[in-house]
Image (tube, rainbow, N blue to C red; front, side, top):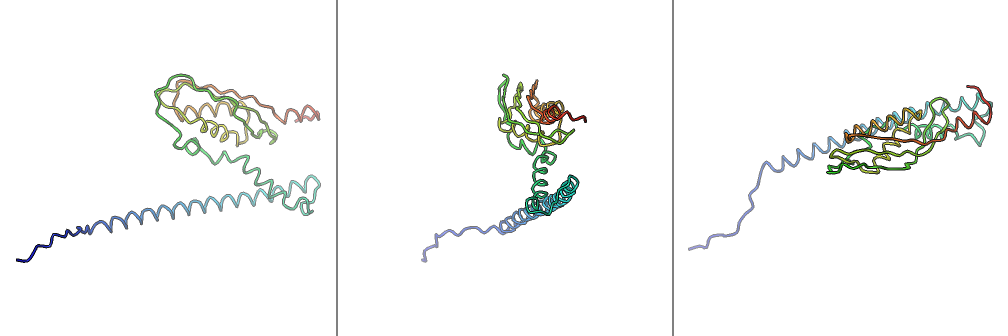
Length: 204
């Protein structure tokens, strides 16, 4: 009698390779979509930068300067990039800055984050105002990462602002993120515009 072959052979799942290929195709499509979106965002950003650079050249000419002289050749480009950074908050949302920074937590005592540095632009004169922001809220089962509170402050400060509206917008963002039973926001700031007006007696 011949001995039986006891060697076990793996079962081939004919559907498995197709399933794997399908997942790869799906992942590839997502990557292509992300790249396309990034390319579109980059093009829009470059278009904005070019327009702003042209306008800053015009401003330099209007004040009597020559934007072609060596010391100012790259100033319009630098100024445009700086202004885009100072206003980058328009491109952000609460969801995009908070991401996965919300946590379920059985905690109902006040959470306070003090003295978050804040830099913004006054919408009346386009000059800086800066200071600190303190945020407190009463959780109702959810808390937000402390660094995310700072990101929310930055998001709203990187827009053309007035102090009163920014205070309200930060509070509303915390409310949207974790639905607390109460929110408090205090901003202590110095406006360069006020100092400028007082020093030079400018009437605006």
